[in-house]
Image 1 (cartoon, rainbow, N blue to C red):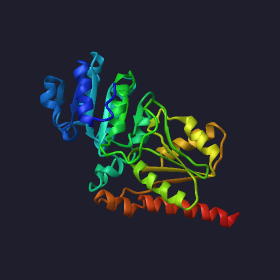
Image 2: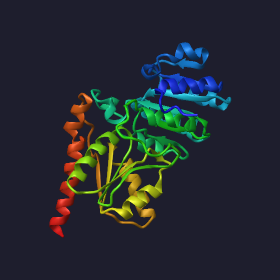
Image 3: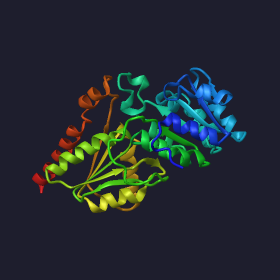
Image 4: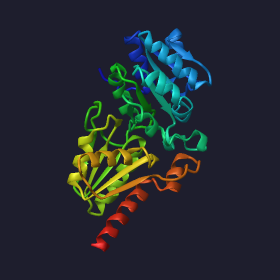
Length: 310
């Protein structure tokens, strides 16, 4: 069964029709699931603006055989309710599926209080918690049946963007997707920034630099082999993410490389020491240097700097 051609809401509803144990909960965050209250009736629960209650209720439902799919703004879900996620969901490893709305740069015009830029670090710090960061709506819909069928807790960075690439590999847990196999630069990314990474790939290859573009999809468990192969087959490893540099993909790559005793040249592109300036998404990307053009320039500068020192 595939949900790749459907919206997230349609895919979730189709699964709820098939599986009576599936329950949808929210903390007054109905934007991506507006039709579900009427469709699901008593299996749709809105607790209001109370994320701790949301997670506690989901854990209780999971203990009684339900599969709760929880929706809230990513910043409030992973931070305000972190203790509840860790203690009520993580320690007993309950199959609660946490969906964080407007994560990373997708928060765009919202200020620092609403910017989830440490969500990956927090969620992957909970033993057994899966972390899924879909590149687009199609990838999110395709992955839902697998993630909701698994017994593990899971955090999902919600993304409704249209596909920016033609996906080459079906979704599977801990399985990355290699979209191009160049041997010059490895560009590792996840989530909606795959769109900008693809733009950067086109620019770099027009300059004669072959790119290995990797859509990691899941950051916990991560596809270690994809990171190792990228490090071994290219001259420069780039990690690109809309997350703080600490605890996200750059940290994950460093952990993997140390574990495999590899020491490639690595260029991290992430937010380092501050929250981003609120604006419309395209303006955020331009201001913070995360457009395809700016990413390509940063990579080219790193390559030319290395060559000048050779």
